[in-house]
Image (cartoon, rainbow, N blue to C red):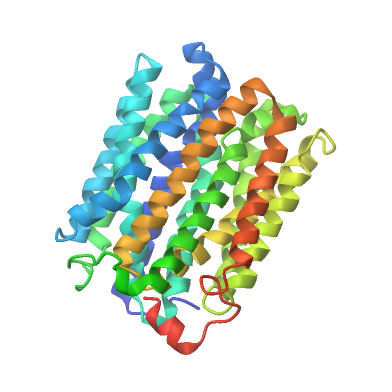
Length: 400
C-alpha cells in the first residue's frame, strides 16, 4: 500500500494533489459532456464547439515549460493556490459569457492555470515520498484525472441536462474555491530542489535529452489520438444509438474504467515500463477499433469506449515517470514538458477531430484515431531506452 509507510503530512499532501488534478481535468474536459448544449446555445456546430477544448489546450501547450521556469523560485504551494484561484475565475467567465468567443477566453485563463498546476503536481508528489515510490505516488495523484472523468465530466453533463451548461460551470467554480481552501490547509510545503532553479537539458546530456524527447513525442502522439475521438465521445455514443438521457451514466462507466486502467498501471509502473505502456496502447487500439462503423449498438459501444479509456489512463503514469526518470532536466521541467506535450496532443486532437467530424464523419474519424494510436505504440516499442522492459534499482532510485 502506498500510504502505509508514509507520514501523515505526506498522505495529506498527496490527497490534496489528487484533488487538484481532479479539478484541473474536470475543468479541462467538461465541454466534452456539455458540447451539444453549448453548440445549441450559440448556434454553432459540435465541431466548432470543440474549440472550447482547443483554446484551453493551446494555453497549456504554449505556457507549461516557460511558466514553470519563470516561476521556479516562487513558493510551490503559493503557485498551487494561484492556479486554483484562476480556475475559479475561468469557470465564472465562461459561465457568464454572452458569446462563444468569451467562453473561449475564459477557457484560456483556465489553460494558463493548468499549465502551471499540472506541470508541478507530479514533481510535488515525487518530493513527498521516498524515491523508490515515485511512480506509485504519481499514479495516485494522477488518479484525480480519472476521477475527473468518472465524476467531473458525467456530473457536468448531468447538471447540464437538468439545469443548463452554465450551471455546471458555476458548480465547478464553487468546487475550485473549496479546493483552494483545502490546499491552503493541508498541502505541506516541500523542501528544495522544488523551489530551486530548474535545469535545462544541455548538449553534454544528449542521451538523456534524446530519451526525454522520445517520451514527449510518444506522449503527444497518444494524446492526439485519444482526443481526436474523445472530444466528440458524446455525439459518438449517440451515433451508436445510445439514448441521450443515458449519456451521463455512460460517461460515469467509462470514467470508472479509467480508474481501473490507472490502478493496473500503478502495479507495474516502477517495474515494467515497456509492457505497461504497450499494454495500455493495445487496449486503446482495441476499444477504438470496435467503434468503427456501427458494429456495436448502444451499451456495447459504451464498453468499447471504457476499454479504450482504461488503456489511455494507464499510459499516463508511464509517460510522466519516464520523463522524470530520463534525468535530462529537473522534475518540474520534465513535468512541464509532458504537460505541454499532452496539451499539444489535446489541441491537435480537438481541432483536427472537429474538422474531420464536420467534413467526413465518424467513419473517417475513428480509423484516423486508430492509426495515430498505433504510431505511438510502435514508437514506444522501438525506444527501449525510454521505456525499458524492467527497471533496475538504480533507475528507480533516480526517478524522483
